[in-house]
Length: 337
Image 1 (cartoon, rainbow, N blue to C red):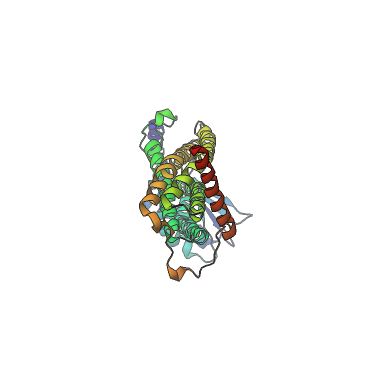
Image 2 (tube, rainbow, N blue to C red):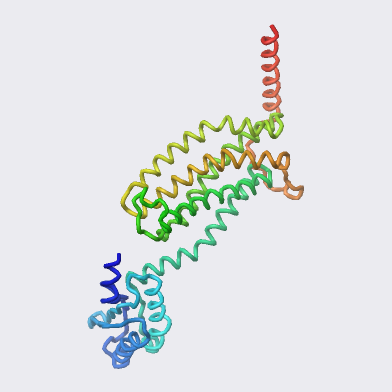
């Protein structure tokens, strides 16, 4: 990396300059030629490039390709600022003044910057959609405002833990040697949004599975504390088995040499491990135990919402309760004998 930086300082812009694709009705028209010359001059005088700015003409297609080495080179932030100067200052002041001329700017830096800008612009809408949709689904499925809120908070904790581990390992280098990621210093651009969607879905899967067993036990007549114990105990084996499988699979991705696959594998494996142990095994039952009967709170004005619960019929619940009581009675008689 140090050698690459020295080469980049000696030859700014590297081997992949910005490419300005100039298209006109007549690329050889005097005003177009003058605009191209002005663009070359201003690209250097504005500080966006140190030159040389090369122009390749394609007369038959009425297209000219302008290659502009950007100041900044491998420094994406500085190169992005140079690109902004070309797009926002140099191009409008030169090529933009000629009617019928189109001059989009592309290249590696432009593609990376546009992709990052599009991702950043999508973060809030995606986060909002996933969180709101999950909240409404939990609210309608469990008929409890408390369950819906706690599910969102716990799922966000799981995602936040994954983000923290990625930053610690790949950005700050804590334990990076353990996964072969020394000197990376950055996180792949698309990974945070990708991990959020995947992890939120996995976390919701665990949460629905555990809380469904707790709610069923509560509807069968158990008190909240007993229902929580029953739900956690009956789902522990399945949740643990599923988590072990997923952690093992994701950990394999963490051993690959590609940084994108390595970061994805480490992030997913760590998040699933934390979610299945600390989040679902400790925080979920702890929070529900502290809330007690408030777990099933639903304001009266929300009762008009559609009911998507999948509870058993009252007759089945009553039969189950009688069977449980009868079984306990028989066990008591056998113990007495």
